Structures are given as C-alpha cells and as structure tokens.
Length: 441
Image (spheres, rainbow, N blue to C red):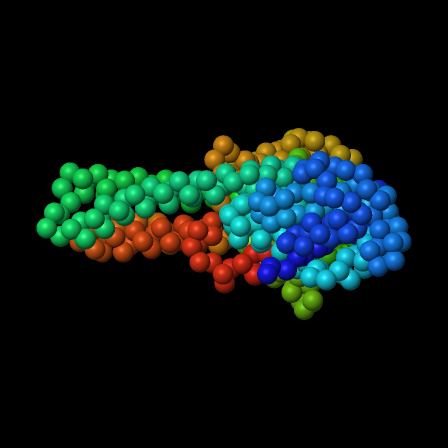
C-alpha cells in the first residue's frame, strides 16, 4: 500500500493561517479521527474542532477540506487541515500526525511527484510550479504560470503526436514489404518531418529568453577607477551595497546585487576599476572584472565625463553595452559620441541628472532580451538539450535513404520530446527535478 504522507504546506513560522496537507489511502481515516465526525462534503471548507485522538485534547478550532481520489492534486485521497498559524499550534498538529499509524512526513516535492506519477501533470508543468513558487518578479510569475498551466507541455506533446503519426507510415512500409509506401505519400511524410524540424529550429532560436527570464539577466558595471561604478550600484539597489570612496581601487572583488527591474529579474555586478596595477590583489580584481564582462548579458560601461575616455573601458564596448558618461553635473549634460553601436547617456549618479532616461533605456534593453512573447519559451537547459537531440534526429530522418533508417531516427526524435514531458521512462530525472521543491509541495 502507498504511504500516506503529510507536511506543512504553508510557510513556517508565525502567521495568521497554517495549512497541513495529507495525501494517500489513510488521509480520510485520519481526518475522521482528528475531527471526530464523518468526512465533510468534498471540496467544501468545513469548520471542525481538531483533537488529538490519543487523549482528546483540543489542537485547534479550524477548517478542513476533503478531496477524494481521483479528483485531487495528487490523484489520491487528499485532506487539508487549516489551523491558526501559531508556532505551537503547528508543532502540536505535526506531532499528532506523526503518531498516527501509516503516516510519514513528506519528502521535498513528493506531493507534486505523486501528481506527475498519477498523470495529473507532466514534467514541464511540475517545473513551472517550482518556478512559480520561486518567482521574484512579475515577468517570472507570468512565465511560470503559463508553464504550470501546461502551455509548454502542450506544444511538445503536439509535436510528438505529429511525429508518431509520421512514424506509423514508415513502420507500415517496413511491416508490409510487398506493399511499399507510395512515393507521393513518402514525399508527404518527409515534408511533415521537415515542417516539425523547422518549427523546432524557430523554437530553439530564442536567444535563451526563457532561461534568462528564469535565472535573471546578468549585468556587469565596468569602467576605470573612480568612474562612479559603486555609486551606480548603490543607486540601482537603493542601498549601500558597495563601499564608495575617492580612493582609487577600493572595489577589488565582484559585488553582486539581485534586483527587480521593471518586473524583470537582473543581477548587477560592480567590478574593480580597469587599469594596470602592480598590486597583486587589485590585478586579480581587474582579471575578475574582465571575466565577468565576458559572461554578462549586458554591460554598463562608465566614463568620467570630466576625463579623457580610457582605452581599457573603450575596449569593453560592443552591441551588448550601454555607455554612461557620469559626473555630467561637473562636465555638462551633452552626450559625447564614443561609439555608434550602443545606447549612450550623460548622467550624474550624485545628483540624479539623466538617471530617469537611463533607467528607462536599461529596462528596455532587459525587456528586449527576455520579454515574454505569445509562444511558450524554453526555460531549462535539459529542455534545450532534448530539443537539440530531437532536431538532429529529424534532420537525419528527412535525409535517410531507407525507410528503416528514417523510422529509427523518428523514434529517437519522439523519445527526445518524451523526455521533456515525462512521456517516456525518466526515472533517473525525477530525483533531480523534485529535490528543488519545498516540503509540502
């Protein structure tokens, strides 16, 4: 018999409400035992005085909900106990549940894992749920909600269904050798393969927008010592995240701050000033600054408006750069044209001059890299790897000289898509996927 599991599904600590969830064959019996009455009407919140079955002591006066299988989140019998969210109340309830025969504390993600195994959701929807729980910005929330609702899974399932139908034609020609597939039908099948391959190619050519949105855009602040990099980081983060000093070379390591920029997640890194230095520690800081620049999705290169632009900073400019001429309060608000391939702003981090226009441009640049479109986006590297495997198999299938070879490559393509949604055996993936869930989900 499957274990009955339980866990606190709301956040731990003092709160107005706490929710404990149970799932499994004993959920109903335990609910009856604690509430002292028959099971409530399904999916209807019912007030109940919950007691310890061992001594009849009152745990709390709360609400209970009953979700009989299969119409529940996990596909099993599920009960929810809604208590007042005091630490002592929750601790007492969990202790009582631990003493009930056949019950055990759930592992991280075990409720959602059971939902997947029961066919309630596919793996992409499960991953969407954890992204929804972890979402820090509105854009992340919207992307995760779309994936949890099954948009990505439906897209991949549609491709898989079409490929299975194409595969059936090749398998028929293999099974009935005396009745080969007509040339016109074979041409139609190969056109179908190329059609799906083309859709896959367009889906993959997304500049990793979905992954960037899920993980956040990485922005590096670069420039010569005393250009105002640390001051800019503090302005963006609205706190003293980095030490600001008139002494050159104060910042020697990378200082990171994670921000919500107009609803999009970004990680901004302040770096050491770019210059040659005999100091071993500062030289290492400069090396790390250059390494961070190479990894960044977007670079903010600062110049002191009152000084001659330094060559080291100029070398950092490319199409993924926004140039800032800081200290415009000292040197005028005109924007010198140092490069024609990127946006440039004259600002004063000290007085705020030009900052509003810069922030608007920065938000637009971030939105351009990860903005949500109408179509669902790839959100994980495992999805991308499987899609690339699928596309390569389709390329081989379309060019295969024999039906047997084309059929084998189509099977590989179908299997690659199935790995994403869990339509094929993915037992080795489940522990990796669900370990990132919180207990109670």
